[in-house]
Image 1 (tube, one colour):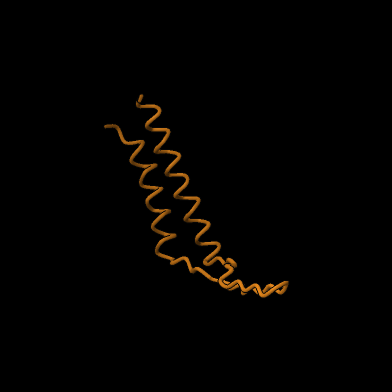
Image 2: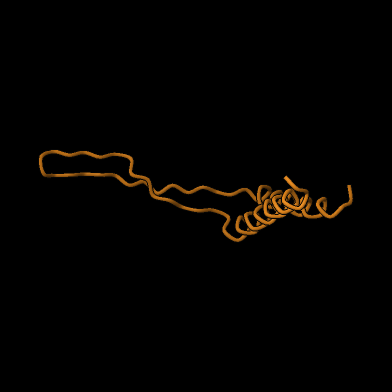
Amino acid sequence: MSAFARMRRVQVAALVLIVAGVLGLVYDHFTYTKESHDLTIGSLELSVKDRETVNIPLWCSVGAIAAGALLLVARRQPA
């Protein structure tokens, strides 16, 4: 693998971390629906849908942005 390809991968990983961190700051939680119980009696079907909320800690978002920035800065330093 050439040095250019390696630098390109690091740059892409850094940008992904930064974008994920910014999204974590903007959307501090996300909600999804999970079906937990199904019951079928003859032609009658019952199901229970639970709404789950996942909170994204502030330190995770800031840490992802910092890690991405460090990867971008370290990439530009001569070896």
